[in-house]
Length: 459
Ligand SMILES: *Cc1c(COP(=O)(O)O)cnc(C)c1O
Image: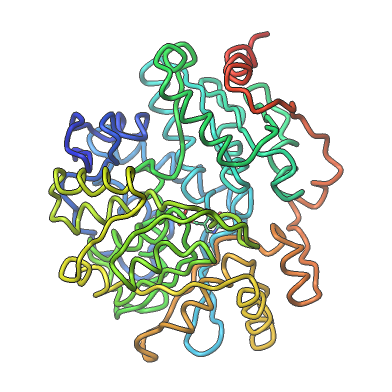
């Protein structure tokens, strides 16, 4: 398998290089040169066996099947449920796919537990070390820390906006006491943190000096790892027939993995994109116009984004993999904050995708509704997906699988405001609030933070 950039001006690479590169040198995203076809698997195939079968074509020839199997087995042994990503029924033909059984109780663990091991393996093979720098508005930081902790050839520095992440989220990041983990609370916003990380990547000398690398959601390996649960859930709920999925969406990585599952052979008749008030994608699906607006803070903060970067991978397919046309559209988007897809092209997307957006009040109403009917407590992100599923579902005879992307205890204030119940943290985090925090507070100053990254791991 080789990978090409969506912008067509970067070298073709194999999996190991794509993993460490993240973004392509031409600003594009890496995608497989050809889509493989999924191997047919029996109904009782385990999560791990399914994962190996689904991912093996993408990682060859960088990794052998045995190497992949070893990492997949270890990664999913960290999950607290024997099915790894279990499904259970809600009401009205709706199902809930629980993606929060990993160490940080949000779905990002599903990909990052594997990606941490893939990085470690690839760096060891090359005799190299890397420094991961992550900007986070909450969930990614802790999932990346859990993926990197204790790994001898990886250091990680996480920048979060001081006072703007929830207590649970901050504690999950800062109570990890490891020599290769550092947390910086930045006096600024998430965008300030993100801009500084981008500036560090643009600084050639700095990048080389510290071996800078990223694990952000545009990394192909993260999308790849997420394809697996679409396959396992479709099989267990649909029994070989078609199913639909509803996905609370931010950067479009998760729902794009659903598109990949469908494109490579999983019978999926509908993919629903659920948005909060940051509705760039649902507006695009309705009008064919992709247009940036400001970011609105909501009670589902992991979906508070202005641009859904992974949508570029779908657009690449939409433009028949023509990198020149796509590059032109992306340049227009960068310069004017807007581009239009046109009806005929958009039809290829709306054939399977639908979207719906919900504000905070509608999100709380969905937490209440699902709790009243089923006794299930949804976190605010998952509630957006369930609300979208109820609203735009096409065929009531087709099972609709809603992705639960976080455990409700990760967002206790929003849940309590909706139903008056404060969800409890799972056992492995029960003493989170008694653990000691390790963090430094720094001004929004690029030079100072670069200097910190350079020296933070010196003994
Ligand atoms: C990251 C995240 C999302 C959004 O996923 P994308 O892949 O960015 O679309 C949704 N819910 C939760 C809880 C998240 O952490």
